[in-house]
Length: 153
Length: 253
Image 1: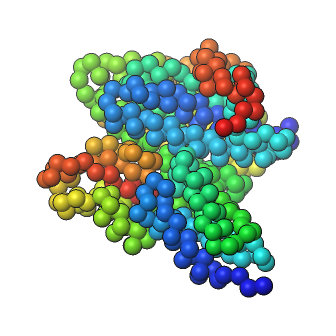
Image 2 (image 1 turned 30 degrees about the horizontal axis):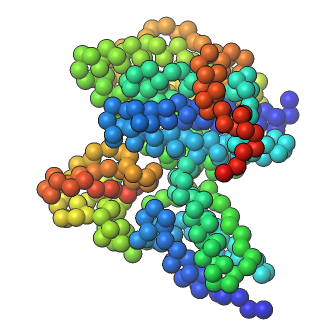
Image 3 (image 1 turned 180 degrees about the horizontal axis):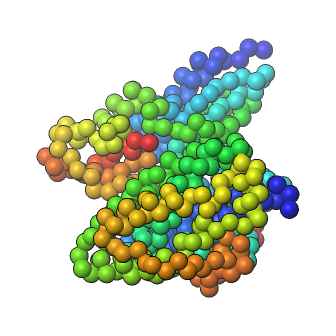
């Protein structure tokens, strides 16, 4: 029996939205680390973003539901802790989608380069933490709007 | 005591520290002085509870008696908890909560750095994952301690009082016993005493930036790690935290 290729599965997974930030997919987020067939079983390796992120179990459920929808019956989801997730794994496509959505993408400098709404570089930090574990709270000094910044870790 | 028995105890210590502190700071949810601080404390609590699942999950696996992280968290009583006394101390005011957080974060970040080189790859992996989160916690708690210590006369006085109150609980984090000796000889965890120099350097730097005076006393309370002498505060915390699982064992939702 032939089964869908790993490339095909990666494409399907790229259609599974992050439950908290639905404009990006779980593949954009960089948490799907491996897709592999072991005989007739599909093994997907997923790494958590933050240890306590409540979205992790929903993401696993969404991945499984999506793959079943494509007719795959035997699925195993493996958790991998190391190497630990880093925002370097966020795709370029994901970063630009985040910004369009109003969330400043992570920057190696440790803070957003510009306001995701008006583009002004004049921004300041309100708090190291924000609405989800992966975000911090910033505001623009030009348009005065508050915004989320995707923390760089 | 076999190596796995010692490892089980060591993992309980790591997981109970994060569990009890995570619960403590979650008590602030809805009560912090401003919304941003409320969110920050709740997020830190969430990280710590997530880390607890990893440590206690592995503890249950090592023990091999079919106890998962939930079982260990909710079905043990005070005398079976192995957290250091520092993390069970009451929240006090916001300053005391952040001082406790800083004094623990400083130890926690150094400890996790060492554990990344653990001979047990499962321990090293958890340390790698959680170390990133704790580096972030430390950055924030250190900044806040400096901001409040070097703030107004009122905030300075409260931070000094918090430091004086919590200082006698520092020593327990560096005390060694048979379990630590077994972990150190197996290369699984460092001798706790070996963390002290780095800790003192870090804490002295931050507290001096905060214009706070480090207490002279070297007296140290102990008994939390060993589980023999917890403070009266832990029992009260557990009655809140474990109420549902005790009243309705095996409840699911």
